[in-house]
Image (cartoon, rainbow, N blue to C red):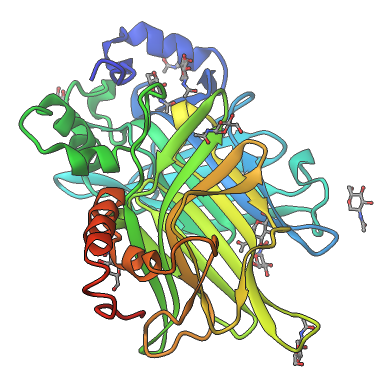
Length: 430
Ligand SMILES: *[C@@H]1O[C@H](CO)[C@@H](O)[C@H](O)[C@H]1NC(C)=O
Ligand SMILES: *[C@@H]1O[C@H](CO)[C@@H](O)[C@H](O)[C@H]1NC(C)=O
Ligand SMILES: *[C@@H]1O[C@H](CO)[C@@H](O)[C@H](O)[C@H]1NC(C)=O
Ligand SMILES: *[C@@H]1O[C@H](CO)[C@@H](O)[C@H](O)[C@H]1NC(C)=O
Ligand SMILES: *[C@@H]1O[C@H](CO)[C@@H](O)[C@H](O)[C@H]1NC(C)=O
Ligand SMILES: *[C@@H]1O[C@H](CO)[C@@H](O)[C@H](O)[C@H]1NC(C)=O
Ligand SMILES: *[C@@H]1O[C@H](CO)[C@@H](O)[C@H](O)[C@H]1NC(C)=O
Ligand SMILES: *[C@@H]1O[C@H](CO)[C@@H](O)[C@H](O)[C@H]1NC(C)=O
Ligand SMILES: *[C@@H]1O[C@H](CO)[C@@H](O)[C@H](O)[C@H]1NC(C)=O
Ligand SMILES: *[C@@H]1O[C@H](CO)[C@@H](O)[C@H](O)[C@H]1NC(C)=O
Ligand SMILES: *[C@@H]1O[C@H](CO)[C@@H](O)[C@H](O)[C@H]1NC(C)=O
């Protein structure tokens, strides 16, 4: 694919360039990439790394709310404390940035491979980005690096976004070029490409030979916006409490994200995980797709005057880590919603496309929606309240089953309509 830029090529730089960079100061940055060249006492490179990184940190505010802050090493990055290691100490790549933040990783090796070992990250809530933080000061998290072993004397390259979540912090890495245990001070000319890059790059070169639907659905970055986006696939999602289903959701989801310009992103249910929690008065459905997009729906129960209880969608939170066009990770929410209002004990259904306004710049489009966040009985939906009561009642049960998309629904509707007179009792609501 022509739009996918080749890797940064530090290897083709003559050695003196690397040296110049190293001399340019304790740390370097090119746009937002961090580049560090760790040298031993004889000025031989032992660790070379260039990568992009950002952090999403949840913190408690002085009004006891939780907020997210993003940190990104960009300017004034130093690499004090980085060391090539010796017989007793592992090589360490350490950087410091911003107002008292630091990050480090050490490396281990075997006879054939090397890999990252322990990652340590310290953020300082005295930084202005945490200005309303309840507690001020440095907080350190330590986590094992999930990176797979890489063959010694090769350069690990991974364009793909990778993330680590620990405590209240998500660390994101992408565009990584790395070699630890560099031999004889010369960064290797051989690459080890990460699996994720192989699997996303490969299909494009053999596009004519592969069947399109799966690869397009899982394509990580929508690089073009002019093409009309198809309707998203409809997914069935459920949560369990013990062995009983306590929340049911069926929907196709499309995000409309406006950063520079609007981009439509379809959520592929086949690669989306479901987590969340059920409760008597509040329930959360969290969808986590393979491209690191998190969509949280929070449902709540409200009492009405007439002693009847209803539920509604109260809050939506979206976190997009997979950056669109290299932009910042995005986190947006709306906790002041009051839609999909339905009698407790029923399910809410809306076949037609609906738009949930999350922020000015972020909308969710739902398709063929059916949802029951409370009081699910016998693992199936209860009676539905339809968003458009004027819709022929008849369509209601059909569309639930016809989750394969509009075409199937149309065919079925046409079929049933044409057989309506003969088969009026031939279906059952579930
Ligand atoms: C290594 O490089 C530094 C900075 O360029 C220089 O001051 C030092 O003398 C060099 N050391 C050796 C052993 O070449
Ligand atoms: C949504 O985001 C806000 C602000 O980041 C946070 O306070 C809230 O707990 C989040 N809600 C859910 C359900 O994750
Ligand atoms: C090994 O490195 C550590 C930390 O850089 C240093 O404290 C220690 O003295 C070194 N040991 C030897 C034997 O050089
Ligand atoms: C919370 O912190 C902000 C920023 O320092 C300050 O303006 C605000 O008054 C504080 N609120 C409370 C309740 O302390
Ligand atoms: C992380 O968040 C939890 C609440 O989600 C909070 O109780 C805890 O204190 C936070 N930890 C840190 C280190 O901020
Ligand atoms: C490093 O130098 C040693 C001795 O000169 C040589 O045997 C070895 O092959 C070199 N390694 C690499 C990766 O160039
Ligand atoms: C996406 O959002 C933008 C900005 O809110 C809006 O102008 C545009 O019409 C939306 N696109 C779709 C397909 O809803
Ligand atoms: C992506 O970036 C390119 C170059 O900066 C720009 O022309 C294009 O409009 C951007 N696309 C989106 C969806 O923001
Ligand atoms: C709703 O009504 C129930 C039963 O009357 C009561 O226990 C509950 O506290 C009420 N909830 C709210 C949010 O008013
Ligand atoms: C990764 O690096 C390439 C080459 O330096 C650059 O063109 C691209 O924009 C970077 N990707 C991201 C997501 O920043
Ligand atoms: C979702 O569940 C319904 C009811 O069990 C079923 O008819 C439909 O085929 C399912 N759809 C998908 C995409 O699995």
